[in-house]
Amino acid sequence: MNTKPHTEGWAVGDAPLTSRFLLGTAGYPSPQVLADAIAASGAQIITVGLKRQLAPANSSGDNSFIEIIRAAMKAHGARLLPNTAGCTTAREAVQLAHMARELYDTPWVKLEVIGDEYTLQPDPVELVEAARQLAKDGFTVFPYCTDDLVTCQRLLDAGCPLLMPWGAPIGSGQGLVNPFALRLLRERLPDVPLIIDAGIGAPSHAAQAMEMGYDAVLLNSAVSQASDPVRMAAAFRQAIEAGRTAYKAGVMAKQDFAVATTPVTGNPFLIGG
Image 1 (cartoon, helix red, strand yellow):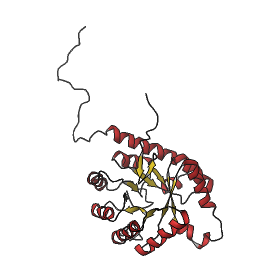
Image 2 (image 1 turned 90 degrees about the vertical axis):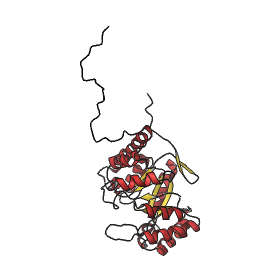
Image 3 (image 1 turned 60 degrees about the vertical axis):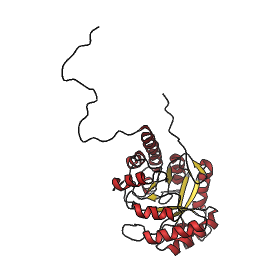
Image 4 (image 1 turned 120 degrees about the horizontal axis):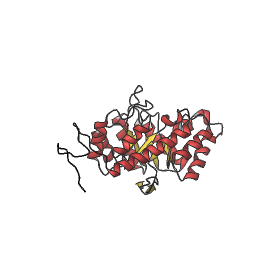
């Protein structure tokens, strides 16, 4: 029996990938724990918040944080995905993305344009405008969005090669609060890479997303805030692999009634020899 992990490949643009786990880097108890969690996750895409790196507190010349990330990326063949977290307008996000491209030498950007401070829900109007401008400027845009089908279609029209709908509000750990909307996205956009971003709190949530046919999962707090982030990163890696394998194998459909696993005629019978 073949017990090797499922490593079916996928791609973002011309970048081939095997891992379907995207990992954030904020809130870890120490730099070493962060590095070990990246290794345990097997993630090939690592996100970093731009405002954290460009803040005045980091102007002293201490680049240890990003150097740890770069070392882990080099060791595991991962790529950096700068994040415009904290932006509230298209103009601000576009400016920050251009700074990231110069700083990190990558056209990839995770685009966040927040419209509500309480839920951290994306502003659909500003998000689409920023995506349109960044795509025009040659960026590969990873848009953090809600599960609204029309907004997702507008983002694709703006030039985004993939979508990253939320499972639940950022950092809430609620999992997939609207499975119907997420299934509808998968059904209506069968050829678009879809990555669940935000709200994942447990490995079972990640497995559920993968069983629904999503291409990958991005998370941060569920690992960084765990009592053992390294072990939790490994747990999510296994759950994501299992969920994808289950999806490819064909998860059985739910029934509203019982279905006997062993057919019977209602009459006892003997098998003679």
